Image 1: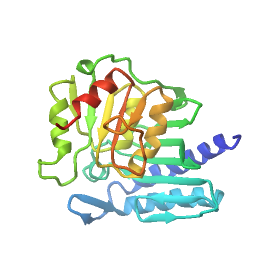
Image 2: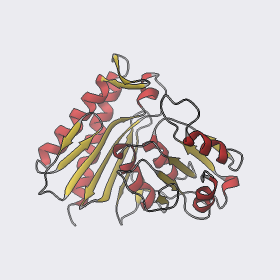
Image 3: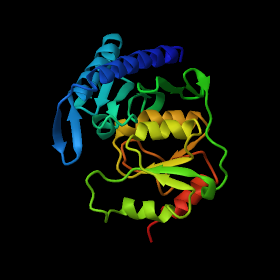
Amino acid sequence: MTEWKEFQDTGIAAAREAGRVLQEWSKKFTISEKSRKNLVTEADVNAQDAIFRIIHDKYPDHSFLGEEDLAVENADSDFRWIIDPLDGTTNYVHQFPYYCVSIALEYQGELTVGVIFDPTRDELFTAVRGEGASLNGEPINTSNADQLYDAMCVASLPVGGTGDEPQVKQFLNVFPKARSVQRTGSAALNLSYVACGRLDAYWSGTLKPWDQAAGVVIVREAGGQVTAIGGADFDVQVADMLASNDVPVHKELIDALKLD
């Protein structure tokens, strides 16, 4: 479809504007709580408004799903934009520079375009299904780690958890088997880093569609593999995702993440 570049360019323009908004608000926002340790700021809302305005003005018939209560459904449209205006809110609140803007486009239910922008490093990760992935316009590929023992991994853990959750047990299962296992606070950047080879694998059982949609496109187009944690087909609506640089690391992680 000839419009893919246009769609991607629109997503890029929206992501860059949202990044500008985040940086502008970074030292003057106030904080409210949606739930325990789940923070929302004026920055989130203003960044999402900027994204929606830019994309909706160009594609008013498209559907939209966004973290900050954005849900625009058009049953006649084949397109749905999935938006996270600020992935890594807690990092942002603490001025820890590991957060980003994430925008994906679905076409007929298939994740097709991914755009992730890190405004702290001016790094733009992009991909279109079937056309490869890039970082600031240069092609990227996943790492060449060929065993879990040599892999640097990242995991998401439940926000405000007690320590008894299965995700914690999975983290501890992998910990002695990998070179390193980290928790960073931004799913979209974790996926971007898997795509460009900075990380070898990332998994989570706690994500929402907007956390993972764009990153999944980018990982796949960079040569990586994305499945459910147990190896089943990935579903963006399900909070269960394992991304890696591909087999054999992927297979080793599937086995290591099993809870017997």
